[in-house]
Image 1 (cartoon, rainbow, N blue to C red):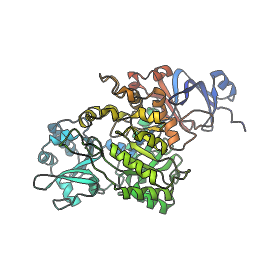
Image 2 (image 1 turned 120 degrees about the vertical axis):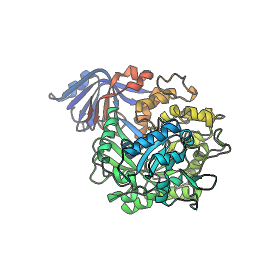
Image 3 (image 1 turned 180 degrees about the horizontal axis):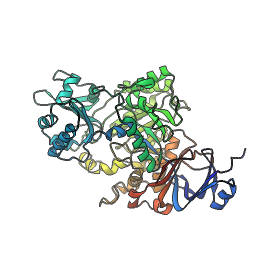
Image 4 (image 1 turned 90 degrees about the vertical axis):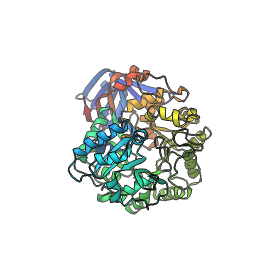
Length: 544
């Protein structure tokens, strides 16, 4: 059966499909009924179109498949628009000043929430002065990496955390010399604050989500995976059992039709998903482009909090630290077994080399995954033993990587993994082993600009930051950098009609403000790449 004739023709320098070894290009694509129905020269595609076809001629502008951010926190991004942000705060004095100003803008008794503090800045802060600056109000502010939190004295009282509260398994409550909690909570100790304050959709969240999705569309992003929450607490509505973020996104009218979204659930919600009859890939009720994603599990923590699980100690901090393991082997085995029974893919956070090895061991002994379920994925993989790269590929695990972390964390790596920097962010090792890549941003922890991620994949630094490429032996070619956001992400999600512009694909594309040659040059000008026109299923979701 022949495809329908194009009713829209988009002309430019078309990147039809990207891979590490080949780039497939054309001069035009023809669209009809939300799909790509013709690809080729501008004359051939125009000749194939109906007489009344709309012709969109963008000259030499690059036209690329719609990008997929394979790991972001969409609800967190939206909430960050209305919260105090401390990512740029580097001194204790500035932290006190920033928090006081934020608290003064709130009504009496309201919680102050936010994110972004760095360990060095908090360590330089007199926490008593910080509590005074808040005027006694409850506050909960997460660290830059999201794996630690500071709770004010009033917040600790509300949560019932005091000197007698034991450290939870997989977490730590920081205490002073007298054993009194300082308010700093590490890893699963942050779970003690779940529901305090409540996580029900707050006023303004819908508009914040809409603003966030619009900014993604303006960068050429048409698909995303929400990475999911650590716990199943705080959910509401028909998907309440799947936790806060998933319950919001699976019912969101602001996301539906503007983004092809897969919403991950916490691993603790696997049984609840089975009770609801939900499997990975299922479309959310009454939604067209929002689907159920993977089950998210956390095996370790983060580099900035020194909670990523390592075989050898950190070379920064107090000495001798090996990180925190959030799950036991038995818990991880039980999670994998439950996911296999329920038809749920797993997305496992593993940052340090010990965590990566632990996950590989568990997946190798787990029951076989049903072919209808998307491939298991490991998140971050920021440090890895060389011998584990072939194991990752052999197990058919997607390397879910956020390239911008490499550029952002370079100084931390050199300080904290000083004797093993050559094994940090070992992307070329993955490429040589034949591992499947899918790229994301981890926003709001890092910028959600995918073009910074493309640049970081090639150069392992930020554009125009004045530094040389960092460990260039582990960099990736531009074709693979683009594939990580397009064809690689589509393969990882078992989405055969996404990530390319071949005939039959969804008509998801972005017309960029640069030529294809400039894009493939992968220079520092990538920081200024934006979309002139973004289509989702042939419909305009952004126009500059």
